[in-house]
Length: 366
Length: 245
Ligand SMILES: Nc1ncnc2c1ncn2[C@@H]1O[C@H](COP(=O)(O)OP(=O)(O)OP(=O)(O)O)[C@@H](O)[C@H]1O
Ligand SMILES: [Mg+2]
Image 1 (tube, rainbow over the protein chains, first blue to last red):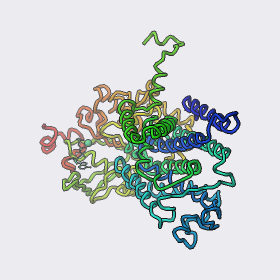
Image 2: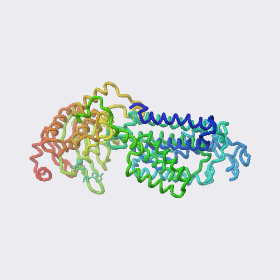
Image 3: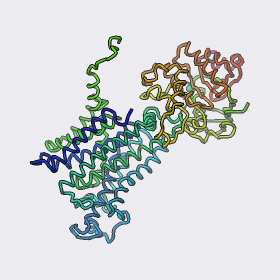
Image 4: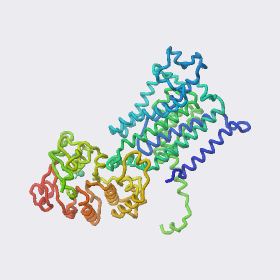
């Protein structure tokens, strides 16, 4: 039950190799075998993988099927996007040193109060954790205390992200309306268009994913992690043993939301835009598919599932844009019926079936 | 002897149906008490009320004559020292037998304490002791899901013992057990009574006889008779509603 078991060890090793090879192939190798757009694309996949790990923590281990995790991701993305907007300064189209372009366009006279502080990088980083964390805390406090579970909980998480999407679409909200936040120039003085900055963001995403996996693993292998599984499998029994279930759910829910927020914050500078579409219910449902496909309750599987589906999406939408949603739906049905333990379950099952040498000749007895 | 638990004038209805009807009951500290009664008599509902799972519409439920149990939730009653075994055996299927016991051990239940918890040697010893008592020491590394029905019953009893509660509420422990196992359960419950208060619900009359204790007969959410098994068995009404059939 160590922190790094076999599957985690293999995954982290692979991730480490990728983290070295991709920037090296992009920045230093002759003929640039890794094109720059690939670096950002892979960086984006790693953010998705972190988001999937966050969802696995609540769904795979605690049994809370969130259909609104995209909201926490988007909030983290917006918090970072707000900083990137402020860092544009007077280099915008309207050259207003105080106000982002969209505010000038909408005739804002001054910066809204909730934009204060975002000119500071550290403040934005804090908000990346605190805003999703606070929303998750308030939401979880009410939902878990009133013992909303199962489908009903899933529905209200979906309603939460839908409501946020509608709100962020409105210009009056002060977050750029349906265009969202974009045209970022640089972060901490590093040009966002330069290859070295992109490589740096890729490496940061890999580190965040590794950190998220290790944190999630530390939580799930602790006694608290065992209690989470108890809640998933027999909530009533857990209560009658004296565990205040709502406290445990709230803890893991908030940790998961913050992790999703970090993923969103790394995503925004790499794709160069954050808009209300990130709150769309379909996005949140897609996260669930990643986790189901990779292998629920395995952490590593969730990360793999996110990367597989995101890569498939990139390829398929490039070749046949119209069929992507059907392909995704078919994939989900296929996985739930034929691969209940996901891709990871299939791989590990195949490996386990290979005959192993039995040192003490036990096989003969059976 | 002092009073462990008292119910006074408790009522509870579900959609107009009175599941518990003016129920009054007193159990002494260290007592072993059997509760019998026909299906739907309200035995399980009574346990739900004691453990805070169900709130009574009216009436008083007192713990140690001081604490109002109608205001505590399930976790709260467990922390006061009330342990419960469900009618349908419920164990943590995806945990090992050993972990099922470990998670039940009396310990700090707060989120932080649980996050940073490390098993002490003392706890290890206690786990082994409990496993031996319920004869599951050979199965400690197996998943609870792989146990037989009777073994799950034993595991749940083990989990109850691990909690070391002051009061044990045991709902139909003998269901699914062989005759020998049933008798061993009765013996075990008799052994732990005295240091613990034990309330057992059971339909199996052989088992109740083996418990050799005071019996309360429940009918339509109300106490019909109370006394020794021979005393209540002789009661005309009891024969009519329960034993006679
Ligand atoms: N949550 C509930 N909602 C509606 N009705 C309920 C509820 N809980 C119990 N009842 C009803 O209350 C009555 C008493 O049920 P209870 O389970 O307490 O009986 P019991 O004495 O434990 O019976 P058995 O011997 O079959 O276990 C039953 O008629 C049952 O249908
Ligand atoms: Mg019952």
